[in-house]
Length: 77
Image 1 (tube, rainbow, N blue to C red):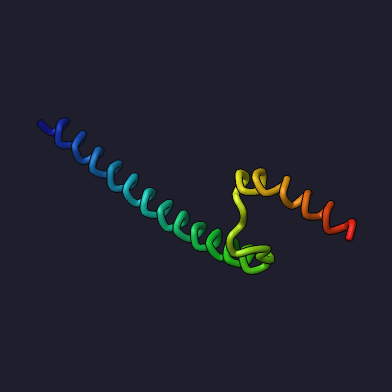
Image 2: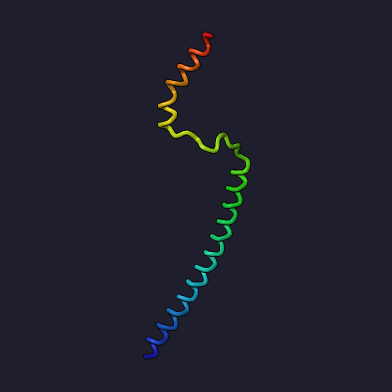
């Protein structure tokens, strides 16, 4: 009986230590997430926005021939 109680006590101690380590890691991860979010905000603010509605690849492919024709025909005027 004493051996079993000692074993249970040891398991509780190990569980408590693991729980404390997990809380410490969660705190560190939360801090890193805040830093990453701040860096992403700085990068996003520094990037120039070319267009609010960028064209999809399919749109660019389908409009390219017409743009080419316009540039050719407008250049001969």
